[in-house]
Image 1 (spheres, rainbow over the protein chains, first blue to last red):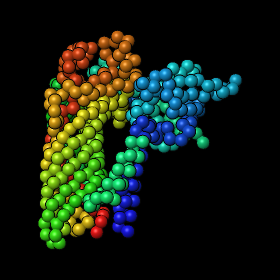
Image 2: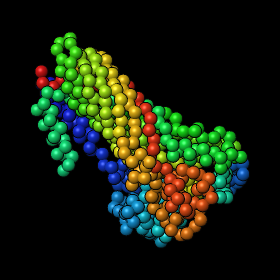
Image 3: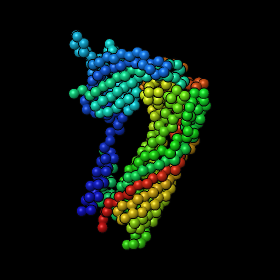
Image 4: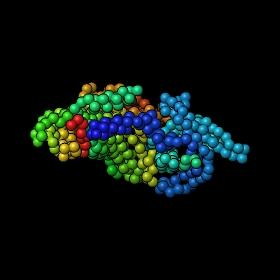
Length: 160
Length: 278
């Protein structure tokens, strides 16, 4: 009996050790499931030197981002394929793009949708059903101490 | 296929040996010294001496984390006596430490080092029913990741390209360790205290392929190829002042940080021994 228990324990632990898919480890939360995300809103904020918001604008229901696991032509850098679906009065339009996510940063590129979503974002919220990506703007030299001058926020929830 | 072969090997080894399977979980501390980062922290503080409220500490503080390991133990002794003890375990240590410089405007440069060690330890010593004491030797696959971010006054943590040093820099290297461990407890559960010195077993000056901290994210490669004089760096510089003077030749001048951390690792864990053959 003891031998059976310990044998089963060996097998379970070995399976646990080797069952992780390293390739998808970083993008586990973002890519789990079908990868359809609704972009609820996108906000652009501009700050003054004290950090106070002096101008902002928000667009609701920006579109839907469909993320695939399939690698793109730039798979060497981890890029995968995606489609940005935008609905207007003429119907729904699909704009292909590429994305890469490493747990902290998301880069979207080659999207030619009317609403520009290209860029490298920092992940502010990384949950199974909710994501918030942000691009920060600061004045002056990229190596100097500077203040936050603007922020572009994109909030996504998993599509039902 | 390799996983299946390895799993089968473990299973067969277990069935056909006198060894007893064991696994352990515990807390790990790593009092590391990282010379490359010491230089970076010092030169960064110097570069921003007029703007800094709280400078970087001179080195990373002790990294803390957890470990989980499994393997085989042979503890041959008479009832109530003392005998030969052998333990071979494989597992992971997951450790974190961070260092931060805060500027006068309450924004900060944050460096957070994550260390993942895949290690195999072999312990050799003496043991009884309720204790063991052994010397240990180990090899570690040292997978380090430096999360270098800029934190704005509103708490937003940026890894984006608007700051040169932002990024996730990884470096890997084979390390080694030696030390000792002591375990006390009841027959099948022991509280184990372990301490071991971690060091680089060969090529101590560094310069091993992939053993320097690099961030090869695609957007950095794109930015670097357009010839700009300042763009998100793919390498963490050792000497920040030299990097500021000429970013483009910094890498060529070997102004980069190799994995060079070393120090004492301490662990306190619970070891569960699963009885094998009677």
